[in-house]
Image (cartoon, rainbow, N blue to C red; front, side, top):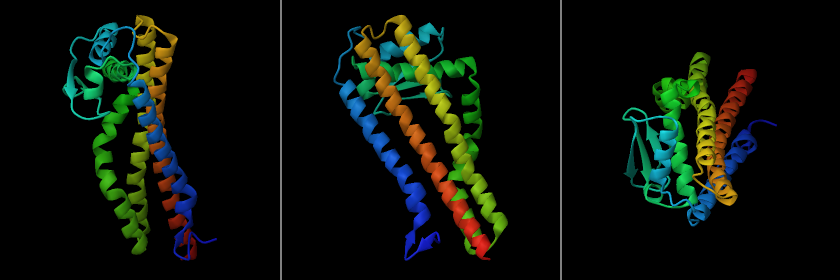
Length: 235
């Protein structure tokens, strides 16, 4: 069956649509788990800000500050200014979700402090990926419609950098969560098994969004490769 028939892009349906569905499911899951665990107060009496400081102390990090930032699930670590920014629902919150998320961001700070290799690779390719996200697909499409094969592969090569970025991002996020959960357990930041399990669910759900993003990029790349290959066979 041709890739495009009766106005239907079959490669899109078979490859991209399932990945997009996975992305939607992952987003729904993370929102659902976050909402549930944001309603459960932790028994240790720690806010997100206090939990982040506990993780920093565990790793002996003294040059990272913690700030509040507006937004929902806008938590992140800024390595350039060495600041952990925690959202409104995390910074002053005493919930299980707040401890898990804050500890995760402090885990990123620990990665930078220790020179964790995957995060070095991710940071190194960020500038190129910013360009690739804008010009990769347009270049490939221009090459496709103008029958300029080298331009097609230059465009696809640039677009593939986005997939590589997401591929490297996955172990970075998983490692940050692993560090967070290890410190939470060792330092007793969430004393009960139920609370620890709740934090783990929040971080696992968040990790699935990165898996879904990688799957979507891979599906789009495969679709374009199949389309351009089919065009090449016809020519």
